[in-house]
Image (cartoon, rainbow, N blue to C red; front, side, top):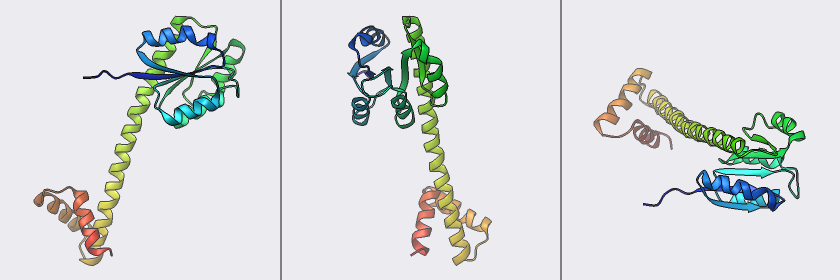
Length: 193
């Protein structure tokens, strides 16, 4: 059985920024760490792979980096840590407060980085759980709409009342060992042509 390998991306215009962070990330369980130098390279990498964490050292060679962090936060499931000089940290925290990006000022201690890393991982985990729940709820809503359409079809063509149509769908599902969704689809295919 293979163990899950956590993948991270470091975006930095300078190699000197990344060495200590890579060591800390490896110690925290990130086995696969890719590095790129620019925002455009990072966008390509994110389009091609799934990362659990992206660490951005500002400024980048082609942009400051807050635009990239915002884009990743909105469009990918990765947690994001934005590293910037102390004089920019408060402005970046304010600008990115709604996006879930963790802003850490440079210079930083290993304790501050690891604390930020844990906070980002926790937030990412909650976000993924919320997305799964959202998908489940959207599926349930779609199923309810389908069943309601089938009820309306029964009411229109067979002159059932709403309770009769509801009971009919429930009974068909139970008697035929089908889901209510399957029964609704069968009703709709029979009457809606």
